[in-house]
Image (cartoon, rainbow, N blue to C red; front, top):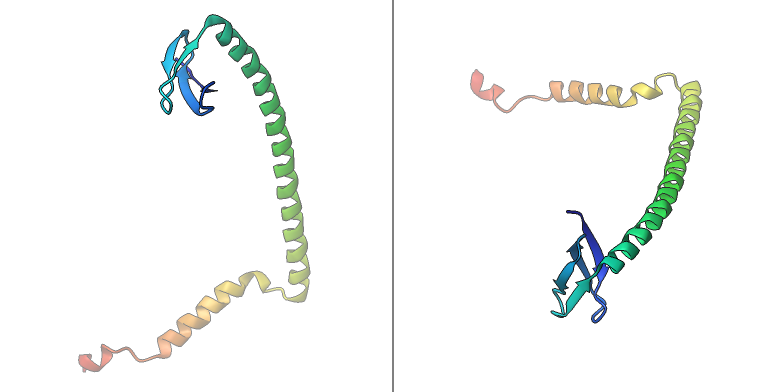
Length: 117
């Protein structure tokens, strides 16, 4: 069975109940809540409209995310184009730095080389 979240009429705390007609006890105030067929129909009706509203929010969020991703990609490509004009090896910068560090470390004497002689 599907669970739904309702608010207790007495203490206004949220409680999770199963989607079937029964009596439920609020976990915070111990008040007995009667979930009737009429309340279940109202809950289904309201849930339908909440679902539609949530769909519109999701669509809007999707558009905004796609727009931001496209804008960020455009800015990155623009930056890359300007940097590549100024320095063709701009994209290899980190690789060159790693190679230089590797060469510097290779020139340093190793501690264990003293004991090998």
